[in-house]
Each structure stands twice: as C-alpha cells, then as structure tokens.
Amino acid sequence: MDFRLTDDQRALRAGVRALLAARFGREALRAAVAEPRLDRALWRELGAAGFFSLRLPEEEGGAGLGLPEAVLVFEEAGRVLLPGPLVATHLAAGTVPGAVTGESVVTASDGALVPWLDAADAVLGGLTDPRPVRSLDPLTPLHRDTGGSGGPPDPVAVLLTAAEQLGTAARTTDMAVRYARERVQFGRPIGSFQAVAHSCADMLLRTETARAAVYAAAVTADPVEIAGAKLLADEAAVGGARECLQVFGGTGFTWEADVHLHLKRAWLRAAMWLTAADAEELQAQALASAR
Image (tube, rainbow, N blue to C red; front, top):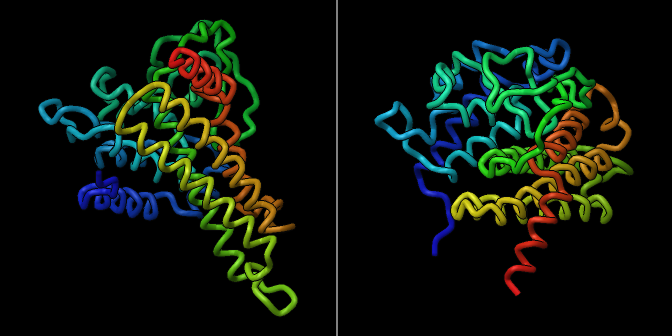
C-alpha cells in the first residue's frame, strides 16, 4: 500500500499553508494575543477557501473530500495557532446557515468547555449553564458549561483536534531545530551538543509517530484508533513544546517568544474533546474486548 500523499493532497496542504502565511503570520498572531478577538474577515476567507465545506458533497457546495484532507488542513491551522472555533464550525457546515461560507461562527461544548462563546452565532448541541472562566491560552476565551452532560465526544472533532496538535508538534520541532542551528555557544551551534541534538531527535520521533497515527485514523475513521491518535498527538504537542522551551533556554520563557503560546494551546487542546484518561480507557476497553 502507498501511504504517501497524493499530488492533490500536497497541493491542498501547500495552498492552505500559503493562505495562512499571508493572513496569519507572526504579526497577526501577536496582534491577536494583544487583543483576543475573532477576525470575521479572515473567517470568511477561510470559508471561501473551502476550510469549512471541505467534506461536504459537491452538490451541496462542498469539495467532496474526506477526513484525510480535513486532517491536512487542520494540521496547518495548528502550525500557526489559528484562533477560533474551527472544529465546531467545520462540523456545522451544511447544518448551520452561514457556516459553510464563514459568515457564521459556530462553537460547541465538549461536555464541559466551550471556546469563543461570546463571538459565536450558534452553538452545536446547546448549553445548560455556561459561565466564563479564565483560559490559560490567551488566544482562546473559554466558558465552562457547568450543566454539561459529558456524553461521548464526536470522533471527527477528536480527530481534527488531534490534527491541530500534530501541527503544533511539527511547528515546535521546526522551531527548536532552527534555533539549535543558529544559536552559537562556546563557538559552536548548540545543535552540535549531544543533549540538544537528542532533544530535537526526541521531538521529531514523537511528531512522526503521532503523524502516522493521525493519518491512519483519518483513513479508517475508527473511534478507537482516533482515541489512540489523540493520545499520541497530545503527547507530541505538549512534550514537543516543553522540549522546545528547553532548547531555546532563557529566551524561550519570555513573553516575546512564541513557544509558550504553543505550549498553552497544546495544554488546552489536550483537555478538550477527549482527555488522556478517556483515550486510555477506550484503548483498554478495546484490548479487553479483543481477548
């Protein structure tokens, strides 16, 4: 079997990366941190680019693509820390008016946490008693639905969140490797030191392991495999951001560096849709039933 991306998939990934580089580069990221608000113009551009309608049938105005392509798109969103309830709006395409084009912003509760509620035009599934809470991610305002049911999460939402985590893992790995090549200490790039090289290698290993799991789960759409992919992607994103902080040293812990933003978003994603404990429980149940 050939697991390499097709030419169309590579073109899709390149197109999304170019769009996000042009519309949400570092200056836009920092502006969003300084003033957290949802950019409606960018949201409509994402809709025009097919971000939300990607999996809709062509007769309904979509691209007629599948989960593998959606994973590639959300991975790119994770790389740049694109803010907003992307997963919920994508899931709402075809059911909530305006979601396809980005005219409507749609959020959803994972059973407890609700991102971007004040900016949303609609909420999937409804809410019981949402109350604002302080978010550790400055780019994601949060409410807690204190009366949430905590039912089983949507597997597609879990997978797309894992894809965003994969994007953060890949981005922090790239950041660490680039800095290790450029930063000179004792007359040598710090990447030539064994401890730094091993850290970067560990980051790459976790990232590529998570990538294989996420891409495979996108093909099978199996809930158990999706749970495993989320678990590995969470570990790669959180662990990678922590390792990246170490590679950067003292500068990585400053507000001016972007590493802490990736770590905070990774922590938040890890706590949403399917936590590590829930993913492990699903895996354990699957193993027990297979005996």
